[in-house]
Length: 422
Image (cartoon, helix red, strand yellow):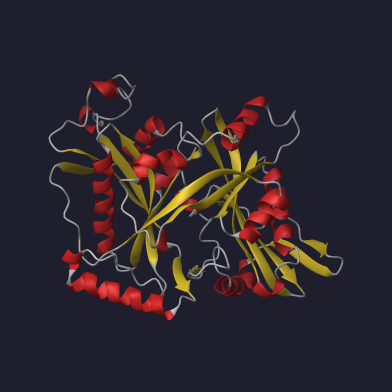
């Protein structure tokens, strides 16, 4: 678990909005705010209000569940006439980017404003307060993620707060079916020890943008179910290719090094932290979903796309750190994803398996099973903003990092999505 900064760094501030609305922004206090934050969460959908489907979050009695595993985190609340009308969360960590070794970044998430108090500047006040906390903690860049069609969020962050787009990720969702999938016998799957997984991630994913400096803490977390590697059966998990790439003496035994073709991923159990629920869906969606599950249960050979029961609170697995090596590694990744599906079949609360891939991972995307109905290709918009604007404070290396992240050329490096920020 990360370090809490819930009660430090931000003093209560009373803000005047539109010359008449007085809002107090202060630190979250569990004793007086817990039930009020949970009530606000139940009333606020995630994503665009214009979407046909509305996603709601159940934090299961712990409003800070989405940030408490980060190295440093904070939650702020906004009050209007003693009514809690808004909330925001932030987390801080050190990451790598392709053009420099390390930068400190602050992630903004969980921004909620009561539906009847929107368009009063409350969200703007909350974001600015979190940015102040970031600056106090020497953060170089703030970043956030939102749906591309969420006009209110895009307008707030990009038009009013100066954030710029730096990634468009695809959210791939694979429903969990009732039966396990037969895996090809030509593929061998092995679960890695944490130390092995860390060494491989640092070696082969070390140049990936936003790889957390504390990847070891993520892999050791109890929510991380493990890391698996797939390779062709009969091939040694070691060859000259790896030896010449510097894994000799890394702490892996000769039998514990990947060969020419291999795939790797890790799994995070988000369902143990919070649950999701789709609300306000038309009756036709309920009928189709239930019918598809009945057909899948009794006639699985028909391969009718199944829609799980997402209209009641459900959990999900998040696959992170996906990596392929070798010209024939795509099918190995597909087999790994099927293996994770079979794990989820045994977990009654897990209804879907989710992952995110970037523009540069188009080939990888082809081998990740997903539902066209549930997935959101190129719809997860990530935006970033430098917080140290003084030329003497933001050194040249970090200026280069910002240019590389936000340049007009398409992103050429992969992007690591931290499962703690899902």
